[in-house]
Amino acid sequence: MDNLKFNLPHGYGVQQLVDELAGHYPVKKEEPLAEKLAFYDTFDWRLYQAGLMLSESAGELCLSQLATHQILQRQKITPLPVFVKDFPDSQLKEQLAPILEMRALLLLVEIQTHSTPYRILNQDEKTVAWLVFEEIKPAGGKEAAGQVWVKPVRGYPKELQQVANHLQIIGCSPAEKDAYLLALEAVGRQPGDYSAKLNIRLDPQLRADEATKVILRFLLNVMKRNEPYVKKDVDPEFLHDFRVAVRRTRSALSQIKNVFPAETTDRFKQDFARIGRLSNDLRDLDVYLLAEDTYRAMLPDILRNSITPLFNYLREKRAEARQKVVAGLNAPEYARVLHDWEAFLAEPPLDSPSAGNAALPIIQLAQDRIYKRYRRIVKSGRQILENTADEQLHALRIEGKKLRYLLEFFAGLFPADEIETLLKQLKRLQDNLGHFNDLCVQEQYLLNVVEELPLNGPSARKTLLAVGGLIGSLDQQRQRVKGEFAKTFTAFASASNRALFQKLFAPEKKEVAE
Image 1 (cartoon, helix red, strand yellow):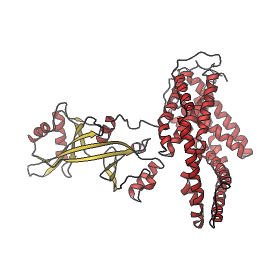
Image 2 (image 1 turned 180 degrees about the vertical axis):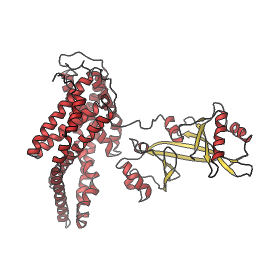
Image 3 (image 1 turned 120 degrees about the vertical axis):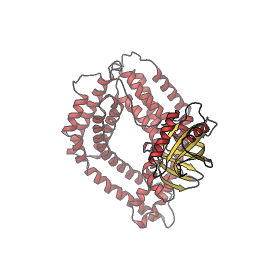
Image 4 (image 1 turned 60 degrees about the vertical axis):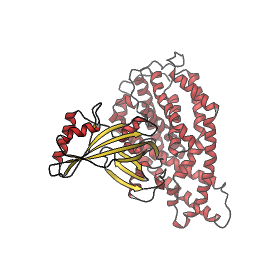
């Protein structure tokens, strides 16, 4: 049986509880235990979402099941690495690596616990269950909370249940939160309180301008949540999420047409385009450096170390690019744009001759935009099947990204399972096109950067050979991915997919203003 946990009745002390139980069972107090615990997760709660909990006490890391507290792995590690790649090789590292990936471990909360265990004995003075009173005090002077655990002893399930029944008769209620959740609550954190994934429920009849502002306020919040960590350079995903929120904002302003005054839309499209460009170089360099191990693996063993000067040079360029990003985010112009944007999003609806779609029900506008974008992609894709030019694949990738954003903006207006089906098909197409584009960009970047590399000495030729070998491998991959386009696109443009797009987005086609 699992551990059972209870809240004490209001105004009830642990000694009073023990005295009550002592009328039914012999009870023996054991030595109290004090422990300092720290809990860790990533900013986007990857461990919590995976049903796991990572705690540290006295230099020992403990990975447990969130629901049952079953310990899965434990290991002494001092000091705690920020990234899983820096963990010593172990089963703990193997289990954490696919979950954490490139994300940093952040300290969520520290607590001090005082546990007082009591043995519940039978008439033969054998232990049949454990009663543990646990007091939890979060760091920072927050108020302490207490719970009672009933822990099983093998071979005595009946006695465990009897003790639990007595606690409930006394007035103890089953506790839904453990020390981890209570500590998070005490410091004002809600598990899963951040996700960059759009999960917005809109009233289908809501005015289009108001509905669009709901989406844009969500994206603004994502930018603001990530911005401090971008400046601190905690991990590359903060910049990624920040940039995606900026890109989605620009996409919403461009694609959800004529819901705001034209001059307002134009102004903020330009502002967010500038903010997006600010971090282009830094993000590109992050992508190259994150793929360092993959790049090395593409090379023959004899050349894998020879490419080190390239990555050292990219790290130097990244440091420069990061300084520019931080300076841009600290500049008065950035603060002014966000201030004006936030103020605009808080304004009530405005009538404007250039906002002809503002008062439309959002469901009508969403259907129109999604269906037109889908048809445009199908038409372009069919032309590419006849002539697969690189430039056309790039243009189709952009179109696919726009459709993806529209589907995500308005997913809450349509049946979740059907939207999920469409997003999966689209994602396969995007993966193909995105991978192809990345390989094109990487090849060209390496060709350019190799001319800047400060190479000298006898190893310079080997470094050039290694870069050339990498370009060759990337080119082979590019040709293979390009060859897979026809099959991927044909699946996306299938009759079943087309019927689902038509059912959801064009049941009774009505024209809206362009």
